[in-house]
Amino acid sequence: MLPATDAATNRSPARVRLRPTMQSDLEFVLSIERDPANLPFITPWERTQHEAAIRFPDFRHFIVEGGADLASVGFLILIGCKSPNQSLELKRMVVQSKGTGFGRAALRVAKKVAFDDLGAHRFWLDVKHHNARARALYDSEGFVVEGTLRECVRGADGFDSLVVMAMLQAEFAGRRAQGLELPA
Image (cartoon, rainbow, N blue to C red; front, side, top):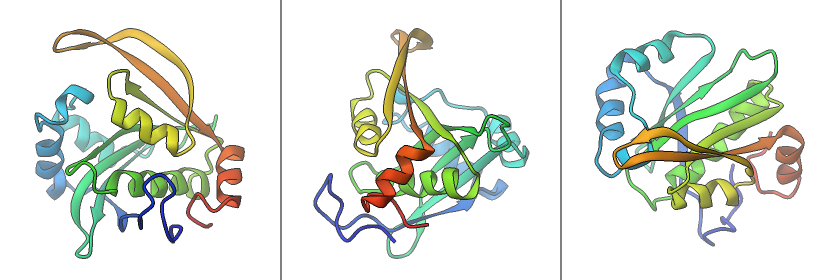
């Protein structure tokens, strides 16, 4: 269970759960991935890439379900689930409705999965430099900036830089001890 209020927003966190993505979910995944509101912030995958991520043991592809009815509100993908280095990547997280708290709640569940269930030592991600909203979320959720990959992905208006952020297991444990993470 999440803390009674969210320190970043001073309100109750959204209710979410993650469930494994099925083939029947892929139209939903592709539709929100290709939504013009999301395209500037991600590099969309082809359907076959999502199909492979559902099947490949090193990946975890999840549908984010949220709200009172636990409707599909987004998706997220973890990579490196079988890594001998215990370094997992949050490859992608896309939430349909921004500002609802679903992204923050899904990120907290993803951290719990990464550290508690998959035994990660390091949980990392990269985010486009111009995605201020996502960078602020990751920062407020304890991710530390490790560096910038300058102009490394081609975007619609030229090349985009990626900011690499990560959290270590000890940092996660410290946040949990402060009541900032989901309990074990």
